[in-house]
Image (cartoon, rainbow, N blue to C red; front, side):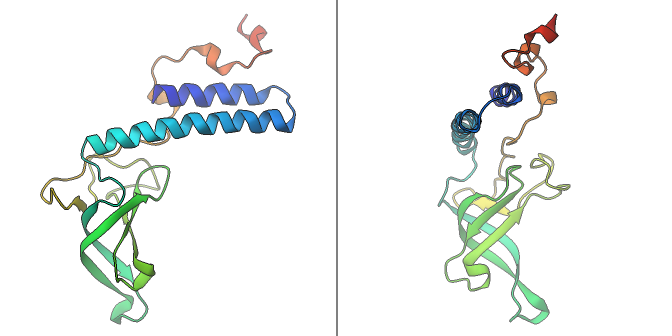
Amino acid sequence: MRLQVECDLSVEAELRVLRGGDERQELRARSNEQRAALFETRDALGCGLGWPHRSEIVLVTAWIYDSDEPGGGLTYQGQALYEHSYDTHNVSHVVWVEGLAANHGELHLCWEPHERWGNADPAGDISMRVAARPDQPLPCPLPRWPKESDVTSIDPRARIAVGEQTSLL
């Protein structure tokens, strides 16, 4: 988390310096590569803690909207394949159910309780379990978008772009 916050602050500071469009795109591309490396590491850690891998069989309970059903929907309870997180806060996840006509087989599952797309709530729960461990709740995944307040000691120079150091004096 500290690396992500420091990277975000560094890129933000570098973008404040007047640059051409090509240089700004290069900075953004470098930032995206660094984020991707952090996300891959976090995903590996999450899987190591018990979160499902992509395409792993999970057990889910979900309400599905289907206009052909009485009442506008049905509850599906059974096996699915875990696909991915649906949002950057890791609150909503997508699973795929073979042969399910509604939503082309895709189901969205959310952590409950959650408020307005905050990070997944460790006190909450999700209606999904890894099929190999049906009685074990999933661990809350690591937050995707940490803030400055998540890191207690950030070097103040990380907020200063090259050419703006005089404001430190």
